[in-house]
Each structure stands twice: as structure tokens, then as C-alpha cells.
Image (cartoon, rainbow, N blue to C red; front, side, top):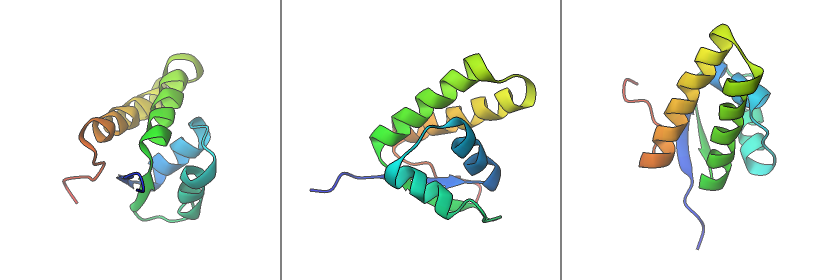
Length: 95
């Protein structure tokens, strides 16, 4: 049985942050890179394990690597990813 993946709707800026501050490999990295040049909101499917890894990576960067606006942006993104992990859906309601 295939493991269920979580769908995340991500803005271009969010995908750029994930590629810069997340340390992904395999299908999760491929999914982000496939939409890296898009100016549209894109849906990325990611496993629970990769999502947990991303949250950890962003948390580290929030606490150790960034300051100011980037830190705030990462914190907001991390909050959204944590909600997706908790509720199983990273779709934006306002779209």
C-alpha cells in the first residue's frame, strides 16, 4: 500500500525558501525544483517524513541562521507546514 502524501499549495517565494533553507533530496526536492521557475501557486505532494524533515530544517534556520524579514517569513511558512502536518492538508483556504 502506498503511503499517503500531503498536498501543499506553495507560493513561489515559499518554494524558494524551502529550496534554500530545507535540505531535501529525492522526490521532495524533485517536486520543488520542477516548479522552481513558476510564478504561480503550485501544489506539491510530499511525504509525512519529508514534511517533518522540512519543519526541522526551517526551525533550525529560524533559530540559528536567519534574522529579520527572512526569519519572519520562515516562521510563517513553518507554522503553515506544521498545520499541514497536524491536519493533513496544506491547501490555502482563500484560493
